[in-house]
Image 1 (cartoon, one colour):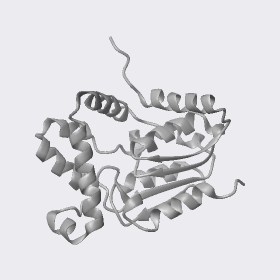
Image 2 (cartoon, helix red, strand yellow):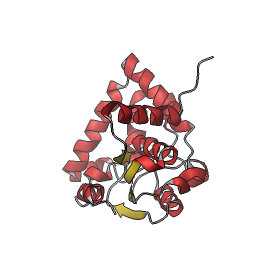
Image 3 (cartoon, helix red, strand yellow):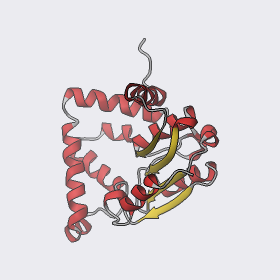
Image 4 (cartoon, one colour):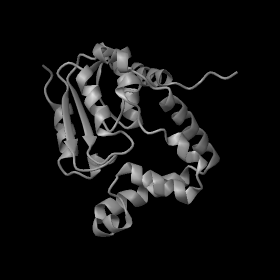
Length: 206
């Protein structure tokens, strides 16, 4: 019987990377699945994270989980691609994408990335990621995070809905919570988002 792939495994890989490069601590940003990894890392190694920025992610458990993307695997490719786009941004219908070139480019890239996942090796990695994602739950441990934390969400995100970010921020003392005009890719949709995240991460240590 194989050991199930967990978020703790991925966070342990991140800790191993810090050991390799010789860093005692770091400033960490996690987006979507990466946000789950970042949360797991931060609750396990609170003293090693100086500042934490989380985008379009979820805590799991009572804090709310991100949409179970494994359900979409049962759909034919074209239906799955359409469903994923609508989850990524609830506004993304044909008319919206025709009228918003920047969003159309992001949508096209997401679709292309999904096609790449049909490669056997990529599909296997994706399956492991979904397995870790499904078991993710740091809700009861978020209070262990004591560093300055920014939690950002997209107002039209169907994968990691607004309430999940609100829940995360409610459990981390002093956390900043900000919403942006966009969906799951709000960092690249709202011009204010990425500069705000960069400024937060570059702010002087207290």
